[in-house]
Image 1 (tube, helix red, strand yellow):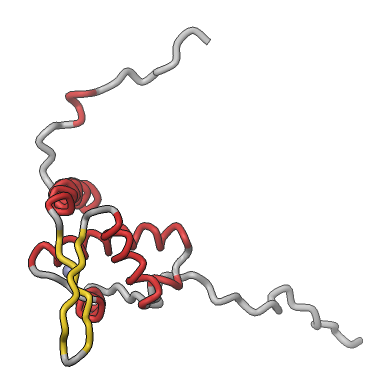
Image 2 (image 1 turned 30 degrees about the vertical axis):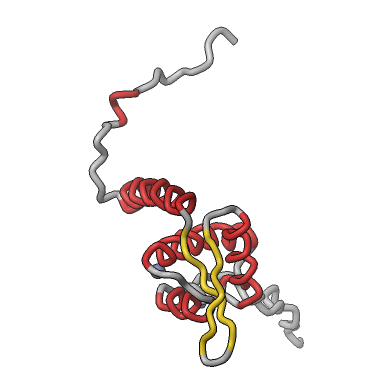
Length: 150
Ligand SMILES: [Zn+2]
């Protein structure tokens, strides 16, 4: 009368779930979420470059304070892309006997930042649901049935 209680259905160890509780570096996120974060990172970069020229290590430290952990392998291509797009311009300076690459914002980058800033405000208002929408949604109400005559 040996009760066989061998095969429990829950023997498989749970995989390290993406439970969102671990603070991951940007590189450890899924591609989609990573792209999303990198959009925020680019806005941070443009903003700080608009205040004063930035350099790699400095902006890395700044971004860490906001909870973004970027490896140099992610950050430097990002800076190069922003430079190639004409949003940033590079200026090499000698610091402590070494060349340090500084990036300042261009007029084109400044315009991109202004546009992004407006979109950020709009986005924050919507997703936090605390903002005041100057244009009530009821003003552009549509009829419930958009298809007719099928
Ligand atoms: Zn910042």
